[in-house]
Image (cartoon, rainbow, N blue to C red; front, top):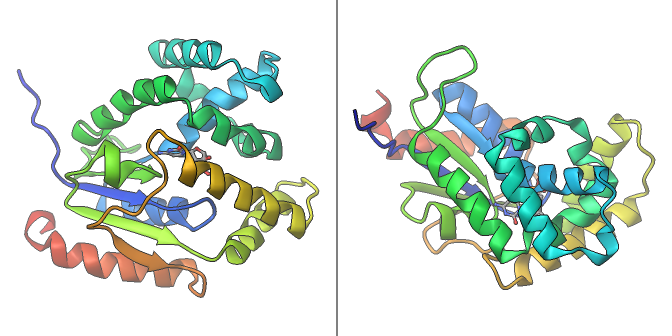
Length: 234
Ligand code: DC
């Protein structure tokens, strides 16, 4: 039997720390959609490379790509993606270099498209009503035909403050200036790489979260989704 492809796809892109992850979780819970944090896939590969002792200062792109293929084939990528260390400062430092390898991105692309078209059931076993894919190139490359695309952003300063709080909450020590510098460096790498750079799709709706709390951002997005999906979701 041919499974029917899901068409209720929401693409969410934007730079690090803009609030994409929180928004995705809240929207998935509210609408009964399955969510994919695509950054966690690149982070999982990075963490695996760190754990096996690869020299991250001199990244071997061929080896990184082979590792990504293996992790993806064995589904081990999902286990790594659940490891809290994917959000450590060390992983943050190297993930953008891993994510810019074109062959490695091609492997991850297939996984993401499959998720969007055939979302898995929700954690409570219900069938997902749609999929929210969150990342950097979702509206531009992975799901260019998604009926709703958001580009979530905030000033580098607001994003650095949020990241600093995350580190301190995790018990890691960090300074605001260090975190800000790291965010600016990662924006630079993500936006200027040759393969699928971070870019707002022409038809994406821009939400600047610098002055918003989580609830306000959720309400803005919900209003737009309700209008666009009025027929589908009722
Ligand atoms: O969203 P995040 O901070 O977890 O992303 C981690 C890194 O992965 C970041 O450097 C950008 C990269 N990334 C990407 O290149 N493409 C995606 N779709 C998602 C993340």
